Image 1: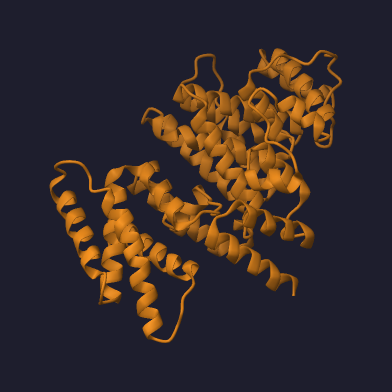
Image 2 (image 1 turned 135 degrees about the vertical axis):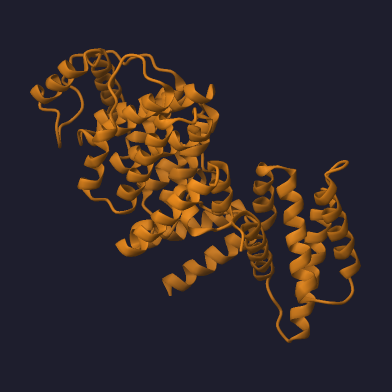
Length: 416
């Protein structure tokens, strides 16, 4: 009964995209033990509206994270970790001496933060505070945040051997996250690069690879903070890094299925497919393919999908007006293949205008065509099904249209 009720809540939310329906869905998951309060707290820190509503808290403002953590009971842990990282950063000017110091202090597996002598909380930028706060949720969350931060800037890095090495490192970390075995994570140590004048790719690689050196959480947090700062520096702005980290962690915390549920054989095949995909396409295209529900790409860019069809189509517009027009074409073609009757004229008009623009690229893109074709497509599909004695829900019709768009655009990107 509980599972059936949960599925009803989920269907209702996915059909409407409404905040109230998502809140009900998350509350039911929390009640059944399918979602932990700790993960919801992380989502609230990341500004997820439904998680905030379930917990009855406000998302923290950019410069208000320490106070927010204090109110949620994480204040002491955050302060102790921040002081530890401050002292470690001072000591790590001499890396070899600092590593020896780490061992002498006994800050290996199971050690607690603190013990270095700092009593004053260091001054940190809002971005550093945000990253350190996220890492309080554990080592896996920390590693996922670092992976997402590095991935966010990968397309902007110089196209050289060091960027290729960073790509290899990210793939190794993806394997560990999907199959959490300590041996996989220890293997990333080989990617640490020593030197005083590292390029952007090597700086990111070195910071991220050091997470495999110790299990001590404040040490991992220092590694991830350095990774995020290097990624933001490479992009000359923080927002793409924040967005990538947020997307990765919301998918991890709120998505029902996880990659680790797959067999190792299935996982290995998917990772090999992802590697082949990256060899043929840009990282921007890989991210688009994840939106189009292409399995290997979704390993790199997991998606938590609370959105209506309109919101999903709006997301695709991030890849330019050409993709938006192609989306309208996909919808028109699919419906015109499946139906015939009143309303087809509007679909034909939208299809012809869109195809003409795609062929010439002259004048403004016919953005009206997508909106016009979407409602006409819904009406036509609903009418066609009703003639066959079946009354589809809005969610059924929208899923059919989403499937058509995914198939059409994937074929255009990947070929037959």
